[in-house]
Amino acid sequence: MQERNTLQKRIVHETLVAMASHPTADEVVAEVQNTYPSVSRATVYRILNKLADSGEALRIRINNGADHFDHQTFPHYHVHCNECGKVADVKMPVESLVELLKDTSGYQISGYSLQFDGLCPECQKLEEERGA
Amino acid sequence: MQERNTLQKRIVHETLVAMASHPTADEVVAEVQNTYPSVSRATVYRILNKLADSGEALRIRINNGADHFDHQTFPHYHVHCNECGKVADVKMPVESLVELLKDTSGYQISGYSLQFDGLCPECQKLEEERGA
DNA sequence: CTGGGTGCAAACTCTTTGCATTCGG
DNA sequence: CCGAATGCAAAGAGTTTGCACCCAG
Image (cartoon, rainbow over all chains, first blue to last red; front, side, top):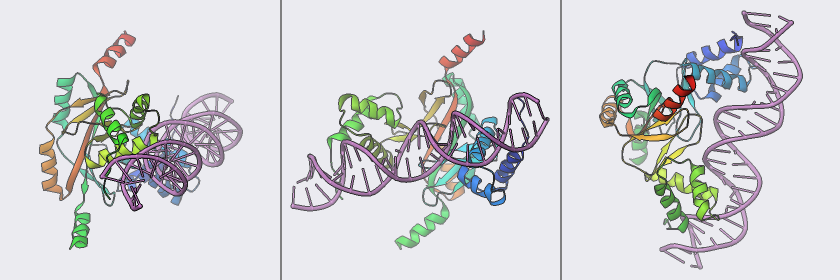
């Protein structure tokens, strides 16, 4: 029952932290295998899941696609561009809403996720140029 | 390019509306096939996707599981019980946050989804009894 | 008539799992 | 040593897609 400290765990966690973006599991796999080709896809998935479960990383579910992971664990949210698929961070005060929900619903809230969809400034620009 | 009005579309939409809960696509398929066994899974998926795209229904993504659909399109959010998997509605003022995001990020926001995870009152009770 | 919609089954994507092997403590 | 963790490959869940047929307009 004792958790072990393996090379793979260190690699996956460090890779996730090093990737500034919000990579999918597969992107983490690719990045890890750049340097350590022997690390298997299954292991990366297992480790990412463990990180998400233990709260050391966030799992971000985007419509129509694979889950993304974020090594930043402080409360924040995400904007997803429908055009380029990019995921960006947003910092906003949602805590008060969580408190409100706890008070009014009787639910015991353990987590929440807030995601926005839209067009990032870059894709808006491209869209305009195409239209013009 | 003219959209047609087929029996299947009416059935799927009516079934979704009739199901008070927040069914998964598969649950809609099952319900539809109760009455119309000839309607195929692919058709239900196609129609649900079209409804979600056109804004006539909401797609709710729950961690580790299938997408759920909600025929209610007015702005509201969802609580998901980690224990029993139930999805319930929440009404809360998030619009102000969307405005804030539009103003500060330059994103063109077309939608957003806010989901909470936790334990519903019923499952909390069960948990207590088990512990006692 | 005509092409959008459907049914079927196969394909696809993402993720998990069984099992033998490896290796951290 | 011993069992947690890994690698591999195969399975699994959920969803999409190619194609021939069908039917709404």
